[in-house]
Length: 370
Length: 251
Image 1 (cartoon, chains in turn cyan, green):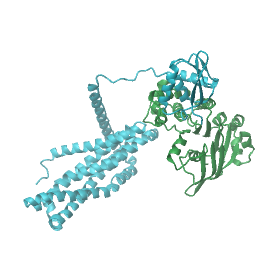
Image 2 (image 1 turned 60 degrees about the vertical axis):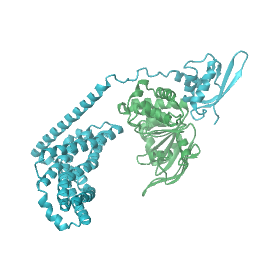
Image 3 (image 1 turned 45 degrees about the vertical axis):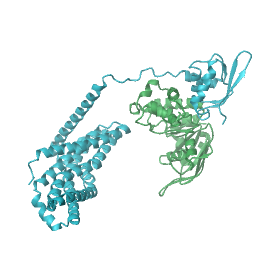
């Protein structure tokens, strides 16, 4: 390929610049900005231009010349008709005249205001969704034929049964770590046997529900948001609506119910794994026998703690599913929005779960403690 | 320009292509036709190196598409543009940034130059400067195709690969789009390979036809040459009323 070249020919009174070779994006000398400066310097003395020897000129080459000429036709120009048409096209470029939206002067007040409004908007959306779910439940009580059993059991399997291994593993490991660290402290006071109280209360009441909630929010919550989001992008939700199928009944309700059922079961499962881990660790670390541990546990951990853990599971499950579905339905049809909404959904559900956990702690402060 | 030799494709047990040879010369506009499921789009994807054939080679501009050297591969990929069926615009970027994307990837142009080039390409596909700030989600079907075309043309490709260029457009828009493509081809002189179902598009654009049936190319040439070949698919294709236009238009 012939490189773009410039040749100055001196005639009697003026300089004639003869351009030849291929003036294309691929063949112009690099860096192009330096080449443009050189052309601009040459253009200052207003020479004549002869473009006829150019074998190929593409739009990048044409724009380069046009800019070197200061966005106007040079006084003396010889050019083939095809290349002139291209240059005329470049002449026709109309820059976007509308000014860029400038930064608002009142950003310090509008930004938090907008945040508050959008938070309020999301809250209203959630309330509307809960209301719709109550209506759906009432409708399904009257028309039990329409209960979406298949979706319910599919969700139960995906977010419940398939989460069993990972929740057991996490619970077991946390139990071991917790038991090991506490036994070091308890031993200095000679209070080894209190490891049972410590592990029992903390895992059954707090750690079990919160751990499972965080795992499920990351596992099933994100999956729900992404699924509903993609269904919105591909217009599947609109297709459902045209078939007269309510999206809240078919998509949201089975997910909410499935998590409301699966979460407490997972909480029990995870707490059991945690206590087993703690028991193994206590046995290895302090020689506490399994029999003693199992005997003592029901005496020092009142059964109310189990109920608190279970009810936390139900509430967290409902919240996670609601938040996931809410953000899924707000996905706009582009990839950026899908990823942003999925992130928001997971972050919001984990934050809300921990907030609600704190509220639980306040309201149950007199319950289940020996 | 394009040279396919002994290409076979097989997905598990299903044979899609068997021993395909195809040549496309500079300046030709080749329409690839065939029944649905005959592997037209697969062949197109193999042509641009999105898919590796099970056997055989594809050479573009005399170089292997799947060259092991990444630098040579990148250089080769800058010499053709592809227009995807659904446009495949980057939905997170505005129209301007979509068209500017391949230009920015060169790392040799300054922003002012890129902006001028983007506006020029927008003008070429008959869109206005104010459209540059829209997001792909705000565009109509016809505009998406135009923006995608502008993006495919942004590096001044020598070869333009079109996958169903007029699918999803109403007849009026599709006719305009075909006119636009023909005008741009005359002006910029690129070679075109396309897959299409639409006889109107074929009649308006293609100078040659290649017919894909029974896992191979059963005919390749001008419409008259193709029509002379005796094959059930070709007979069927040309006997349908719509295709009369093709026979007149092509060749």
